[in-house]
Length: 256
Length: 289
Image (cartoon, rainbow over all chains, first blue to last red):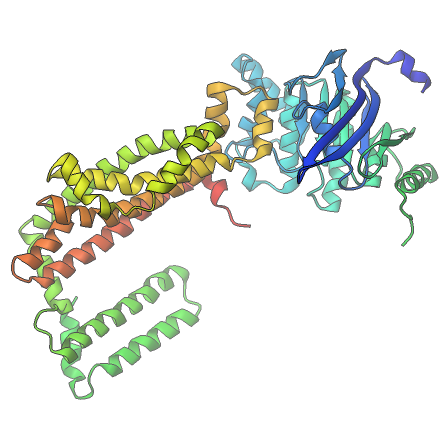
């Protein structure tokens, strides 16, 4: 944590809790979440299903209000979604009625036409969809659709990108490719990324830090520093050690 | 349409019609099971079934010895007569004119109303019960009121067609807007879409496939109701033709000819409106799997 002094806090979560009412009874989903994510950092939220990690991301993104506590971004309290902080959804949030080009253009409406064209083409090239500008989402594979969504987010040059199990619906090979693509783009653009997953491998492959959440009500069980350089060797003992630690924290035996 | 059958009738008279029907059934079985070229099969299979239908029709007339119900041949004759004296075209145009007006008015009022009531949950709460309560009332039940309000004429007929197509359109549009995926709404919020932009870029395109389905159902119902509407209120159109042919001399050949024309135009209308489903902007809404 010695580097932290030199890095600027970007997203600060202060004593955040969330309750829902379920069948007339209060249900506590998140309790006492406190965390600081630094500018340009890649943080994964890892936890079992139903631990409230998606709810946490939705609150941080401003789609839902917290029951108590608050979220500060650049020192300002979050009051709603903003174009400077873009959400990449679990199921495809891109618009099936619009072409790849028009989807990526969504957040650029206010820019001059020439600038729009330049940004859209550059972003589509960046995610490797060159040649598919006029295609519609239904003509694309699952991985390509998810690339469109990433492109749509990157096009507006957001400060922060929220990703809620974005690769969950993909097959395991495509998922691996998408992860290395995401790291490539992240190293190029250095956005702050908050990434929700229930996949231990995914978190170790991607994150600078992994925030492990307990089962409901979700609390931060531990924050694990991954401390490995990209590209990461998935067979190295260091990688295995972090993985074992996370499995232990989740209370799952790592042998079958 | 009928002359080859006369020939066959004479040929097979000793055995009745059954051998021919058996042959046609065999043709269906063959065309149905063999891997023929797809376009060929799409023509041959339904054509064979239609042929069987025609034969059953002819056979029923022969066996029952009816003097009133027309044979296929008499019906074809009636159709020729209507074509030759020009009434058929005049009546088709008259019916299409009423359906067009009723349907377009229903869309012009029903789509905006459905979009509004679908988007705002307060207006949905306010008007949905009324719509659901009026919807089950058959347009036929409105006939006396239609005559009272619009008199005997085009107005009443158009009003009935309007009523019949209004409800499928407004209900379909409302459901479409209410079914817009939360993920798409949140995407829109995330990228700062508001007001008219939100409507044009998300609400309308997201509901368009289901709106088109509503329009398709509505057009089908409108064409169903035009016959009833024209039986009571006007003196032209295909519904009028059917009623008039019966009243003015039991011309059942014209009755059946009119029915067949109504069916054929119904198919054409459905084919035309289904073309809307092919646009890139809405194709996603009909994809399977």
